[in-house]
Image 1 (cartoon, rainbow, N blue to C red):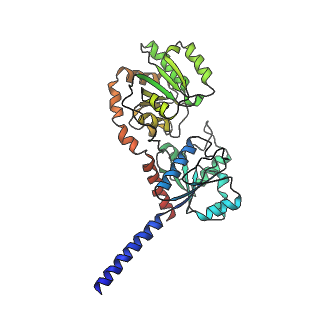
Image 2 (tube, rainbow, N blue to C red):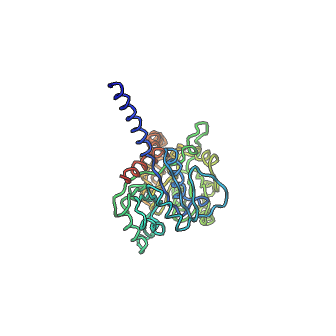
Image 3 (cartoon, rainbow, N blue to C red):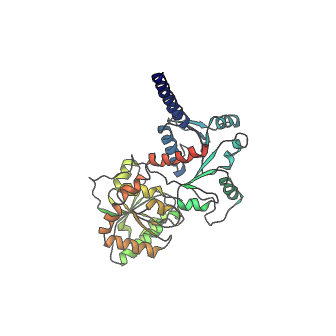
Length: 361
């Protein structure tokens, strides 16, 4: 009798463990109006999270209104341009309705089917000048009915409802250090050549450094509508021999180029919501000099130095100090391993899943 009871308890424990394993499987519906082949920061974040959710044992379906232009496969189902009936059916299927930023047009199914709403906030709900329109006000109201996740502390403070701060990840399979490459070049800028990104400030700082007796070389990686203006500015400042407009570089070619530089400069004029580019630079062994406004300082952490947005004098002095005292760079690089661990894809996804699972209870 005792043996029978023990065996029965053992079976009960096994069944309980199986039940708990099944119970922890979460059905996640991701509502992302823009998705591949549209490629942007938010689309990359959503795609990475969806992939990691799958790899960590959960079910994911993604809704998008971006038409497909090729037959690229994903490890999760992508439903493009669903009908209202399809979207209602998908909402009924899921345990969690997950949005990448607040999408007002995508909230209507929750009026008919009650499901927990989880939103990851990756941008500001306001105009560049700080004003808000009626859509922004509505988005702020929506945060009060959702479980919120923000990519930076600055983003969390920008919404009225409580928000969990979970930093963004970077592609550690692509961005990493290459010890065989000589880090012989000084400065690199990576980003779209638009006014908000502040490449013009960096050129001004380069001209001031020249007056101070330093002539570091700068590589500008990227393209955009401001490129011709920036080229003319470099000519006017008489620093063309110091500036290399390298154009667009991707993956191995980009990583190899980043590994050959000492400092990555991210001189954004506007407040960056986060700044994955800083993580990519850190992963490739660069020390970061970036604007302190917004969430960029979260991405930089203790792996670089920040300066007030738009302050050319402060940027110049920061660069001068680092270039004249290169031994300081080793101290910032020593912090990179611990910093990057928090931003690995699996670590970020686990943090998201903890919040998602709590939202179901």
